[in-house]
Image (tube, rainbow, N blue to C red; front, top):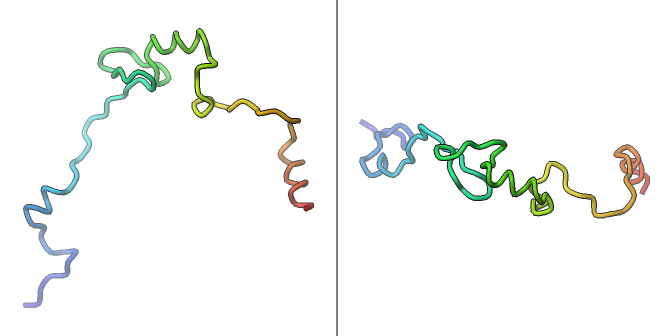
Amino acid sequence: MPPLPADSAPASDEETAAQPGQVTRVIMICATCDQDETTVPLTDGLCPDCHALIADDPADIPATFRAQPPRTGGPEVALGELAAQLLSR
């Protein structure tokens, strides 16, 4: 008999043990302090303590975590105008 193709050959015990397991449960953690959802309630990915800190001083939130990063300056240009400017070059 010819050998089985490599993709349909039965896996050895070592190959089976090396395969990643299946995720059956996910536990969410606070985005800043890593407290898990089983110990504190999470709202919008943050625990109550972190929510209070952010509410006191929102400037502490990195720009990458904000819904809309702050503008660096300069006049605001509509997207259509910007596209027209780029195409006219």
